[in-house]
Image 1 (cartoon, rainbow, N blue to C red):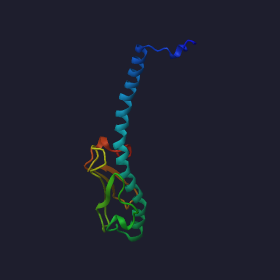
Image 2 (tube, one colour):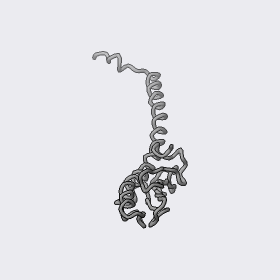
Image 3 (tube, one colour):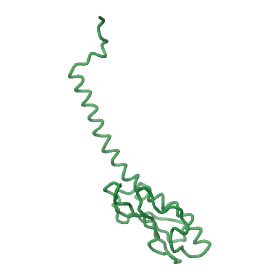
Length: 146
């Protein structure tokens, strides 16, 4: 019978060190991953509102007023993590407009569940500002944190 190769001869202390290293890697990786999940979920609301910006600007340019409902110009107003996106100020008006994205309460990270994100324009849809509604600013995607 031949001798096992040297790399295969790991004593119990070697295995202990190996499992300790794996444990440290897992302990660092899992919280980092979980930290990104809520930002990704909140990004869905930003994406839905972002998809409505151009159709809203075109509608305003054409009719000189905002639509009464977002569904008149935007295709989708909800998603997997976003309960709804709606016009909350300025509907049928000619001034400022405010869109509100509301996160779902179930199946969503607890830090963003049931919270809102706002997107506003005061110049006919040429420029938009993203702000936290009831969502804590630290939980907003990077696009909205400035």
